[in-house]
Length: 379
Ligand code: SF4
Ligand code: SF4
Image (tube, rainbow, N blue to C red):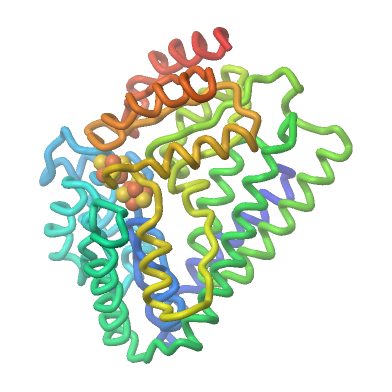
């Protein structure tokens, strides 16, 4: 990324903290979320600021381990540690937390988090069969709407939901356009740059600013590609990262892949392409939101065939040579699902996969490097 663009992104990220402080002084509410399954349109429709709170840093993990078991997913420990230490400004800003009963570790952690903030937990079904799961999930979405109305004092009307759908569809389109830059061969953008952009833009309270920034990035990188400029060549191995979410601070695998000579072209996780969808404005809006969010293909669902379909599309569109399936330590759902993903990649695409299980620390960096280099050499 050009230094100017990187500076602009960093300045927007830092200014955002000041902006949110000012918005809050003016009475605007902020609502934190821990999962892609939370329909964020309802937060935006109430005029509140949605803040993605999943922890991506190792620093607060030690504090979390004073309460939580050590043998727990680092994302859960990092998220709880930030709350316990009160070191995350975005957690501090949140007037309410919306959480989901996704995996066992996360839902039990939310019980403990209640001591720091009001946590509203959505009872997420574990099956995406609409006949079985839609009715209870729709109830949860309705209750979430009522809770947000109570916290913000704003009635969430259909008109307000439609405006939020429009805004968030445009934001998702802009994110998709940034991610789709890597479909160009060779890619003009590094995977670690993609994470940096998606992560920082995700916190911006001013969504128009974020959309504008992403559109500028797209123009910049397209111009580079048209001039034949890329950090890679047409022969550089193109890697798709699948599995658990990543962010700034938990992106070591993407960085090691790049240091080992690969081009990370995509993320099939909820940091990346899992958040690419369009919400339609038709019929009962809560029903539409409930259906759309229920269909997100995460491993907490059983079965989770949507993930394989998403992988099929991405392998084709991003011209992928190999897949790295990342599992955070003690994440049983992604760990178990890895077997089916590897089999599918081999049977349907003849593609090799490297499964990595790690945490947020640097303790295994060199071991990971050895395995990743051997994988890249084999491609
Ligand atoms: S990986 Fe799944 S459960 Fe975890 S935050 Fe993403 S969508 Fe939610
Ligand atoms: S990565 Fe796995 S264990 Fe960690 S919070 Fe997400 S689903 Fe749960």
